Image (tube, rainbow over all chains, first blue to last red; front, top):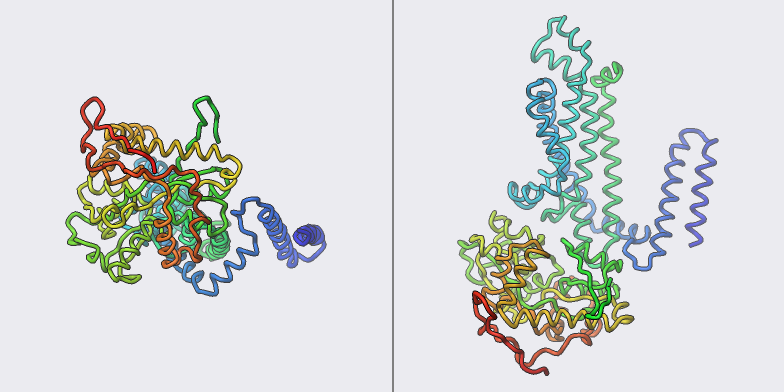
Length: 274
Length: 303
């Protein structure tokens, strides 16, 4: 008990002291000290439990090491990332064109917006029986649930992006003689791209968020499966928390990855104009 | 958990829709007692959770289902197929392994797939699986739906099959013995009531279906009567020979990695003795009489 308390003090001291240090050092020390304090509080809380469900950080670390050692972790990460990638790419491939059309055409918007808004708040978990009916058990259903979860943020984001394009852009393009597909390709799409990318970023977060729910369906791999399977066992809550941590870590990596899209030149002019 | 009145203690029941949440509530002692699949209860004891099995939920009440039109006629026909099991910690899984032992099959000869029971009938109808083994009413659902056929009922392949057991926290056993006794007596009495007259079973199907489980009463009536010994609610004292066999199969399949003696996970001091004369299921009327009581059956004598 004394060691975690000392570490908490250390974390707080580092946090406070870092004010005087260079920004590059602060970028490491600030999140590091917060993580240290959270880890220690977790340890103290877990150790104090009368009926232990929550494992200590040490037990989780051991579980993670074992998962890495026997190769299951890598296999599960690949399986989950594969399902999320397929679902997400399909959602983007269908959602962006659909959102563009519905956002551009007032008639389409009037027709489809209520349906989209009505389907959007339904949790993917509620879709499980229908997913099984349509796609059977296994990867197909899991991908479908991830598709659904990321489809609606993309559609809504794209629709809003098109509808929010500054009229100045559209009118000046029309004055230059751009119409139809050309107007769409050279002005409407690029102008809405920044907001579309924001919606992709949100959608990817949601897609990764539902991986646990999607893998509730009889699949036998993946990080979500690992958590569900561990809950089915006697007392393997170390695996549950290990799965949570890995999902969180990969979530960070995915978000960093998709944020790089925002730095492309094709996208940047859209930001500058707003 | 309980209120006391002159008539006895009031036990509050809570319905869970999945095994893990129920197990977690028991581990965290948010509930004191629960019905759960037998090998999972044993696994919890093996993992150091202070609980004991004090009674059984029912006997039999499980079937192996296959598609109506499939050419699977016996267990040997299941070789090379995909069969859903409710959980690898279920005795249904162990029964599959018991049968595979008998038929000289090894792991992998049948692909066993864990699946939540409510999804099994649809998965069979879809052709995603070739068969499934599960407790009622999920067998009857496919049978009544027309797409499923009973390959075996447990009474024909592992008589007195143990599916779910009543698990109670050790603290409650140690500190509130009379309360646990009252609980077990209550369950035993209602079991005796259920098995003594088909009219009682039909009444129970109506009440339980409508007010507790949100199940079609007709489905439950089917389960409770076709045939009457499809599921039994008497003779529910945990017997060592049943559990030793379950333990051996659990060790064989690796779901429990250490051998435990019967007394380590069962506390048999609450269960009433098994009746020497069990309920004559073959003499229960198949259909309830339109009105008035059916054939009353009195279990004769205790051991």
